[in-house]
Image 1 (cartoon, helix red, strand yellow):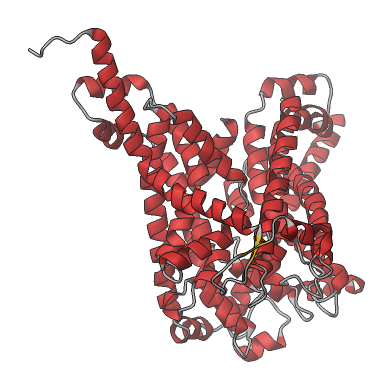
Image 2: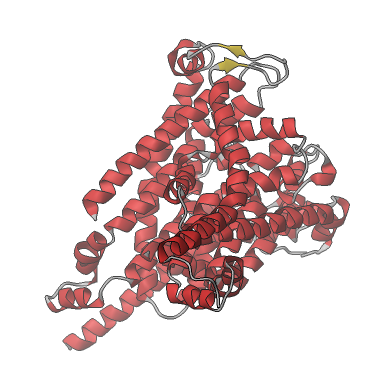
Amino acid sequence: MAVPIAPGRRRRGIRSAEAAWGYAFVAPAIVLFAVMGVYTIGYGFSLSFATWNGFTPQWHWVGLRNYADLLWASPRYAPLVHQAALHTAWVMLAVPVLTVVVAFPLAVLLNSVRRLRTVLRSVYFLPQVTSGIAVYFAWVYVLQPDGAINLLLRSLGLGGLSQPQGFLGNPATALPTLIGITVWSSVPVAMLLYLAGLQSVDPALIEAARLDGAGAWRVTRHVVWPLLRPITAIVILLALRDSLQGFQTFLIMTNGGPGNHTNVLGLQTYRLAFLSQLDPTLGLASALGWLLFLAALVLAAVNLRAMRRLT
Amino acid sequence: VSTSVSAVRARLARVVVGLLLVLYAAISLYPFLWMVSAAFKDQREVVAGGHLIPHRPTWQTLADTWSELHFLDYFLNSLKVTGLTVVLVLAIYAAAGYAFSVLRFPGRTALYRLFMALLFVPGVTVLLPVVLLEHKLGLLGGHWGLVLPFVNGSAPLSILMLTNAFDAIPGELREAARVDGASELRIFAAVYLPLSRPVLVTIAVLTAIPTWNEYLLTRVSLNDPEQYTLPIGLQNLQSGAVQHYNVLMAGALIVVIPVILLFIAAQRYLVNGLMGAVKA
């Protein structure tokens, strides 16, 4: 038999053993995070107060000048940032609204059918799964001047809408086209979230509305839509975040062109960081990255408040 | 009479619903259809353009793209990077999730919040410092230079999902195992991991898909063609001197097919996992 130990001491012994296990279990995650997360975030933050081209041995400290240059002071970079901010604002306005407008009805319709529901759900989810350079190249291909979209429009008798320069070549259509493709890739997750929400709606509520004589349209509009408002809030938050930060589609499909007409803030940051050769723009890139972070925080706070109000 | 009118109306409504659903299926599939179409055309036909179904379908384009352009090497590199990332994500964050869910230790809540706060840091903000750091450490240009940031990037979501999954496992199981003298490591490996298999599969798929497609960090990291992953190989096809869409789409198809197969194989887990996350 073991030596009897006072109950208090014994519990403390178990507790400190448990704490030791706890630290052991989180250690790998913490080490990786300390190097790849904390260190790089700190490094990037201090770089935002310096100028550097990535090659010279010394940073040149400039205080807040990078931020001032980006926001108003530099005649070279401030106009670029303003233009990119305007495009980003359009994307942030259009993508969340259009995503909800497409994904909610799609989920309601899909939820109303039995046959083929699983197959259709998989088909609708495909754009999310394959989101990447391959699919964006395919979009570039169909959007060419002699591509499939122009062909389709002409064969439907809508030749007036076709774009002889290609949808990405015409400055007036390039940004709306990219917005459309961003919506196309963000509908799948939104649709799935709505579907999950629809399946958790209490059938008794819908039955009650039916008995009161409400048709499918009114049930959806006055019962289902209000009940799913928290989901709409999540969908909008995700779409806003992606519109603010995402730029992969823009980099791959237009690289900001034609003539900067599709430049967005994320892309501008990437260009300053990696595509400026010997210009000392790394500090500017860091500063713009931190401005984006600030915007993301504001967004998250606003959204959190909105969600609290709704739920 | 009124019943037959309403029956006709109901049927009409069903037809309209069906048409709308099929229409969006077509929109979802649109670029893929043309990708497949171009990949099976020869050069003359793809330049002529026009029709979706190739008049002279050929495997030659795919075969040439695969063999002449080192796609096998790129494919194996992609597989290596994706495989390592998934394995490390599961190992590191399952352990962390166990600690956050089950074990009591000082600083637990603060550390958990720290990881969750990472969700708000934009990828592009840390991209540059990661590249600079890896340059210093000599990791830049190799596969580990991709794997480590990918693993760290998936920390918040993986920890969130695994902590929730472990929370759902009744504590009595752990107590019982402890009474039997099992160590924490054993309880974790023999009780908690097997019971959480659906979540582990969901996280594996949610990690594998974006890793397989990753382009932004990979593009600025890799210089040596021997290290290229598929997205960079594909990008090289486009920036080559002669650009032919049948070759480019054949390359795109090679990139996309493994992800689609993975999705089909694991979609039950993926869809249920995502839908479960909403309900929670």
